[in-house]
Amino acid sequence: GGVLTSLPPPQIKGQQEVGVVSLKHLYEVALVKQQDPGVGLRGTPLPALVRSLVGTARSLGIRVVPRYRP
Image 1 (spheres, rainbow, N blue to C red):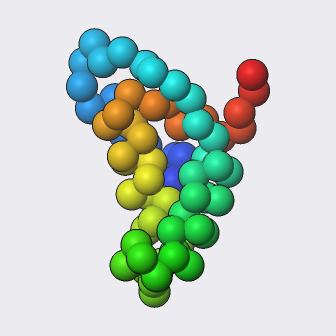
Image 2 (cartoon, rainbow, N blue to C red):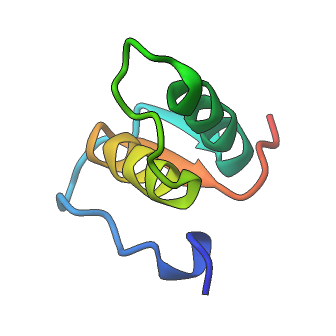
């Protein structure tokens, strides 16, 4: 499966959700990070960057959704 089918449940019970981000937005962030020489991630596979961003977002209390619907 893809990133969305393998997302684990929230890591911290009772953690307050502070925001929502779509997978598409994280993909766009990963594209920028992958090209930025100052970040040091050049050559890192895009799926790995997206998974990392998903994990970071979730650990910060940001829910990752397939599509953002305000």
